[in-house]
Length: 473
Image 1 (cartoon, rainbow, N blue to C red):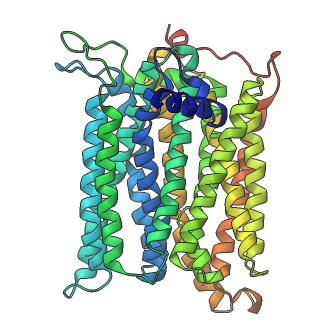
Image 2: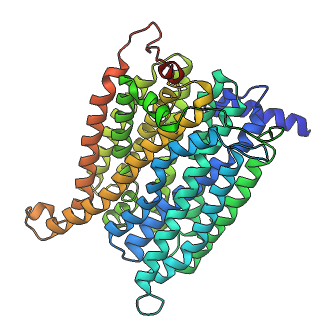
């Protein structure tokens, strides 16, 4: 009976899970899905930080959106180090014989530590502590957010590199894409869970329980994911590459098309990320939704991302050009943000839900297709560098966009509410709408950047790219 059940779920996964055909004899689907649990934990932490906590701090606690944006962007200060983390894990020297496991483990510890500090900092920010506790809470929250971000960046970069180590060369882009699907599934599931738990009136102590539970679940999931995954090298690991990181980075970015891809990635990541800390407060401030209802918006966004990944999987199987698919995702994102803009004057919750789903679909297409394009630029033994470079550009651009979005929303709303821009803009939605229009402009700029990459220059719609080893030679 157990064998029949296992075969049933393996068949269902292969048929309906995007990129499930990445499984091979060397890395069967069961083992791959177990390894992907570290992505589920990262998705859980991402939802907590970028969706649930930002709404609570802005609407319930009354923290200015600028300060919230700074806190949420703090984890992404570590993002530029992703490329270096990938390079270091490629060449890690360990007497235990592991290259990736130490980075994943210490990344997990940093995530756990940040989540352990966070609830006490948030309690102080509610003003329930002694005089001056607000600023002590801000400092504690800054440290907590920074620790969680550093842990997420370290564990994710090394974990993705480990997955590529365990899979055959021809399957590596699809393995990484499948792991990102699991990230989105984790975001979707925990968006629903957090929304259900926090659906009643705001209770700071219930929020503390959610954060502490997230810390425990993170540790459990990552331990299960790591168990007996990376084989130990007899006699320990040694340096496998004598080429310095700076030389490899210059070789990676020397190609004109590679640079254009990274520029398009930065613009697109910024365009899709500015809404991260504002979409849920927008639902609360403008349309009067409660915490559970606004958290459901992140579930719709995650479901849209999964749908975008699923469409990308089908299209790429038919040899579609990844750059063209990324451009389609950008167009969908532009239409989705326009829908969100219209939801305020029409006071329409369904339009907001439709817009949130569309943002997810467009972002999913753009994310997975730029990832697969980036993986095509390097040889198999440089997967850590490629994944780190892609993650560094995406996270840095997204973090800067999140930081700026809060300040722009606060600043424009302050001006609009004084009436200096006319009586028609004296509305709580004005500051948010200003940010939505900036995101639309950034996505149009992304189309301009990625357009030349989508030109068909070969029979299958993609131009052969020189690998990093060839450029170094």
